[in-house]
Structure formats: C-alpha cells, structure tokens
Amino acid sequence: MNQAAIFRFLVLASLVLAVLGSLVDLLVPGLFPKQIDDAYEAYLTEEPEPWVALAMGVFAVVLIVGAIVGTVGLYLFKRWSRGFSFWLTVFSMASYPFLGPILYSGWAFLLTELGMVFWGAALAMAYFSELKLRFDGEGARVMAG
Image (cartoon, rainbow, N blue to C red):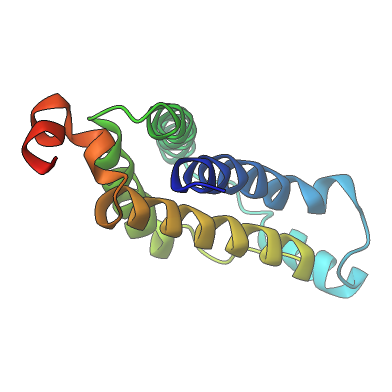
C-alpha cells in the first residue's frame, strides 16, 4: 500500500472512529453500571444558563463542520487543509478542560482514542512524509524534484 492510500485510510478511519466512539454509548445501552449512569444523570440535572447552552451548541457545530471540512481537505490533499486541521485540533483540545466531567464506556473511549491516534498519524504524515509535497503545490514539487 502506498503512502497516499495509507494517509487516506487514516484520515477516513479517524473520522469514522470518532463518530462511532461518540455514538456507541447511545446505541448500546448498559456498557457501564446503572449506578454510575444514575450518578452521572443526577450530576447533569442542573441546567446551564441559556447563553452558555447556545454558545456550547454553536461551538459544537463549528467543530463538527470544521472536522468534516478538514477531513475532506486532507483527503483531497488541499494546500489549506494541513494548517486548518492542525489548528482546529489544537482549538478543540484546548476546550477540553471547560467541558466538565464526561462519561464514556470502555468501548467509546477505545474508539475515540483510536480515532485521535489515527488523526495524529495523518497530520504527521501530511507534514513530515513525502506526502507534504502534495500539499505544497506545484512549485514545491518542481524544486524538490
């Protein structure tokens, strides 16, 4: 398998794994004990301020749309996609401390983490492998060749 095929696999697999990791706990009930689920539900009973809920919703939509745009751009080797995807990743990870406690089953955690590892590997390939020339444009290919 050539580098471009591996790269595209990593990009697509990272998105699929992230989606599956986000949905597995909703689609497969009972992946963690009822007592833990009840305690988490009790914790979540406090409603956030309307402006906080709206801001969180807008932020989530921006991240989801950005992830899709970045994934498509990387898959198509678009010049802008490396920086866009890198900074979107940094921005989203910087938001983690503000999310508060999150409950994941082991399966959800596995799928989500594996997706993040694949995403990181794809970004590393975009910057540090021979594939970087496909992102740098025609001038870079001529100069490198």
